[in-house]
Length: 413
Image (cartoon, rainbow, N blue to C red; front, side, top):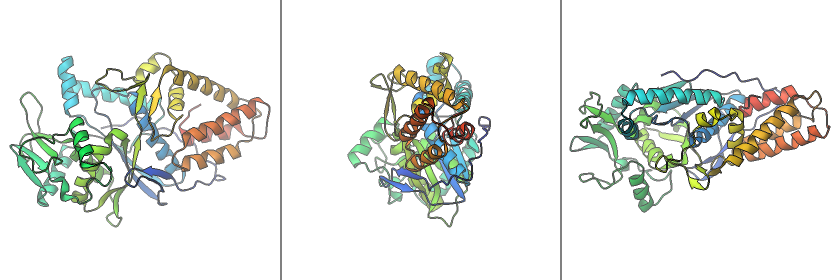
């Protein structure tokens, strides 16, 4: 499946040195520096296309765009893969509700998502992969699990013995009681009769009446959620078998910590004989006007809607950078209004012939980003520079700062 168009990244001057990138690793619950490498492997979970890009999606993909940009700015290659869960219960349910073919709905929302990512100036992945097109990879991965004797049937459905991975639960740090509750809330079936363990993960769902199915050695059906990402990540990221970890970064929203990332990691460890991710990075959730934003509440705010109403994409991007990425953000119209004003001011100051010194600003931005993507501090640095410039301080190069803001922050001004 095609991604959105490539985005030009200006070259950062060689005068600026980039420190190793440190990120909050969910698995260790510590901020840890990534090892310096010529190649990084990053996998970010994509949308289920029953709706396109709401603000929660935007915040997540902005976080990993900043990581992508920083690592590339160090001179390293970033092998970046993102999936699309283009067959899943929520998609089928939405299509049935709206009386539309599920494939038509998925394709429509995927196209809208591509446009949103282009508008927000997000770098595309090298591989943008739908589950439907990856079905042979999924089948091959399940066969490897069968060979390791970690699967069993419940009626005509196939399950993975989750405790085949002795590290199950160590990446998310929840108690068994918490995991059971979350698993039931997020698409799991801990109470299903016939399962050997409540946490065992569905690998292959036999075809239900009125639902699509694919031929496989396990019968007609479709894959479970977690095995999809295992198959896509391990195939397209081409892990180094000499490394302790298959990939460097597994990313997504904090709602994926459990069960999705925990169970994907468990299955990947059995398939690839490696620990899955060196670093698990999770973006916080976005609320709206004091409430959790969710499809069940019907209060999702979409990027395309904001843009259609006149919001500038760079203002949306700036607004979402105003908090620590791993923390939740409560959104309201004032957040975007402030961001819109500041983007106009930033563009004005960058248009001046004489501006305040810029080298210290770029150096400070790099330092803040290297420290767990401290975009809140980055904004304070830029606001101070804008004020200094408006007060008449000189000695900087506006063009160089503008290019650095594009390179590191994705702000196309």
